[in-house]
Image (cartoon, rainbow, N blue to C red; front, side, top):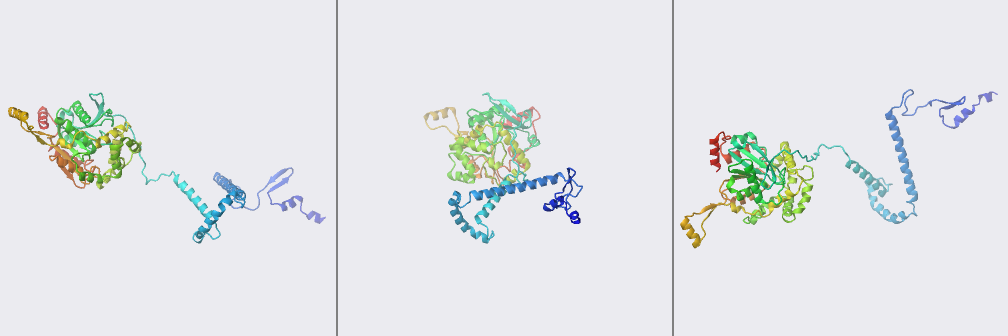
Length: 507
């Protein structure tokens, strides 16, 4: 009986056959208790598992399931596709074994001896591709890479005049008002620019000190000016004349030409010379097709240009419609970019230092935004074509020379009775040219050609200066320019007598 009493119950016998689950049957219900041993990572009795621990556990379990699923898929592929009788093994088994033998030398340096090179390097390549993809889609901002600034079109703000043909021309004034101006200076802008340029960075008090009124305007199709249906340099000069008459420039005025904007200034000297008091040119663009330009002068200019600029020149001459693509990819793309890329030019040391300054970048972005306001590529193509096509005149036409009566009986009789004398032709007013000797946009050989043709022009060569460094944001330079053009500062006009003196000086 004691044996019977000492024997274990059926519950204990069952528990000895399986792990203790902690469940006990008691009077028709299950009683649950914790196992007496503790598993690493279990929470102590009485503590509740946090949400973080639950998430980590779920992810860990999910990862284990994925691994097991992958192993199962691998086994299926090996059993169904990589058997000796499969089509794939029959076709690729021989080549792969040859490749494996050739790559077996890699085991001596990189892999264990018992590893198949094809299998191992396939895995390595796959891991590399995955890592490269992760790095490529990394959205974390790298502060070393500057963000591309988008173009912002500002609300219209320009003053406009109505031209005789019904077009509107936008302009911007700086300096003294019309009734107090001792000197008037009108400035057409260069390529990819606007009326906002004028003389970049010049201070209004400096203009007032010299009594100067500066008027800059948008070329047709640029900024807020209406496009011209068929424009050329003759129409450009007439637009300048109509603008001067409309804004109250009653006397002769000075014309300012910078870079490619100089061709509009040259046109004014040719077509409306009676209204021009003088010209101020800064790195003036010259047509390389000038008939008196020598091959050596063309070659020296051409050598200074970068390949992209040479391409733009060729397309403007031969295939101007193709310029649309390049312009749409650059300054008409809706994004800002570096000035040397947008203009297809190279820069000297001083120019590079200048364009990196914040105030220049702010000016450049605002000027470009105004220039491309209308979003139309046609004005830019017209401007590029004007630069490289026949201007309708030559700089030699501006050369000062004597024109005497022609030989023959009738001209001689006319000369005898009218006492006609030889007269001077060409542009008789002063021309000042400033040229940076480190300019790689409009190289010095261009100005050398101008000084050879226009012997009376005053050329100011600027050592160590580039295309932008002297004309942009240089207070001392601006004072030197105004002093060269107008002499000592006399301030604005104060009375009628001063106005009469000013009319006499400019006339």
